[in-house]
Amino acid sequence: KVITPPPYAGVPGAPSDAIVLLGQNSDLSQWQHDDNSSAKWEVSNGIMTVKPSTGQIKTKELFSDCQLHIEWSAPTEIKGKSQGRGNSGVFLQGRYEVQILDNYQNETYMNGQAGSIYKQTPPLVNPIRKPGEWNTYDIIFTAPRFKEDGTLHTHGRITVLFNGVLVQNNTMILGTTEYIGLPQINAHGDGPIILQDHGDKVRFRNIWIRKL
Image (tube, rainbow, N blue to C red; front, top):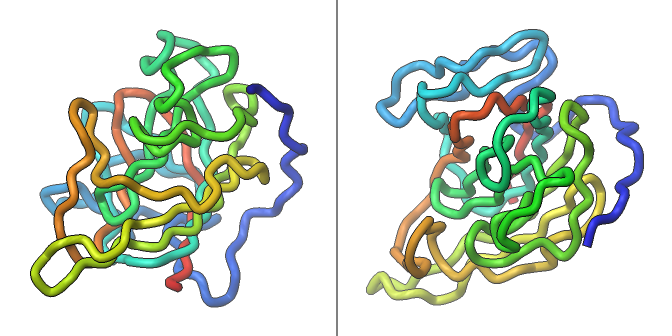
């Protein structure tokens, strides 16, 4: 179901106890590519833009339970459809993806929409704003727990507010994000926040995280 979100009225900023991953005057010093080289995405005036074909970027610091705030905007130049339009994603612990996609008047499969736990759980509603406008994700993540023998003790859980609208309500994460096949359960520790390079010039700003 498509609904209209409230107008964006926030002023970019972070709580005093947050780790700012991308702020008003930030560079990309908090981010790197998978080979640990410096991030090659473009950044100007606190806005970071995917540089296609350079690869995904990840935080240098690793995280577990957290509150994550991220703002993103789909390109105003409309290209492609379904998953080929304004596609990116934010991964918790480098494994569990909350989908980023331009779903404004752009249909796709239900668990591939913006705000979905990709290929697992669709969002409750679609409150996306027009391309070029800023969308916000406020994510509360509880990491999975594992027993000493590496087997699962408790699944991860995630709550997502998308433009102030609840789209994931303490949703159970079934396992790793897989494009094809079933989610996998593999014991792990803390992991990075990852932003995906899917070939589209998605923009980001005002990214901060609080460890819980």
